[in-house]
Image 1 (cartoon, helix red, strand yellow):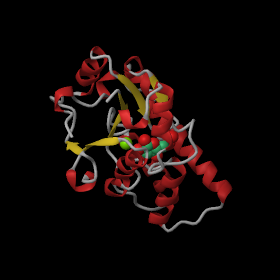
Image 2 (cartoon, helix red, strand yellow; image 1 turned 135 degrees about the vertical axis):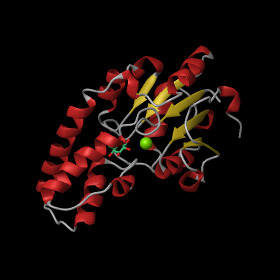
Image 3 (cartoon, rainbow, N blue to C red; image 1 turned 45 degrees about the vertical axis):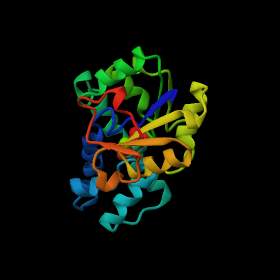
Length: 212
Ligand code: BG6
Ligand code: MG
């Protein structure tokens, strides 16, 4: 193993709450209820696909132009929230693990669907831990397609088989496998059962626990 590739939302930072608030504001405007449970369906899913799921929940039909406008409106609100993020919003245990990884000379990349990745990395101070960033601005195919993880490996100059991916979404674990990489699931074994290893979070997690 030469490199570790990390999903961002739900793995390194808890940004799901901001996605939820921004999608909920749109649902409120359109006149239907959107719950936190509904929001689970949007984790790891691209912006446009998320909107389509939201509209399906509300039974709302929209033209393509209206969808573009709604996605932009949601993103503007979302960005106003994440623009105020601080390092306190890095998930527990993450920074200690990243410090150990860097000290061990292991390469690191971000592999995230989010086009807002640079803003989050900057606001939280996480940018310094990564040698490369592959994000939603560089790929056209969403997870479970392996594109974003393959891009990460390419930017790092390592073979996919030399990478391990950290993911909180089922589609992300599948994307890692489709890239020929092993995956560590962050969350519950019920949803992430296909990963080679599942941990609840990074608290107390160390490199010597990375065993497959
Ligand atoms: C993923 C999130 O990381 O990025 C999804 O889990 C989100 O919820 C997707 O929809 C796209 O993010 P953005 O910031 O480009 O709208
Ligand atoms: Mg995620």
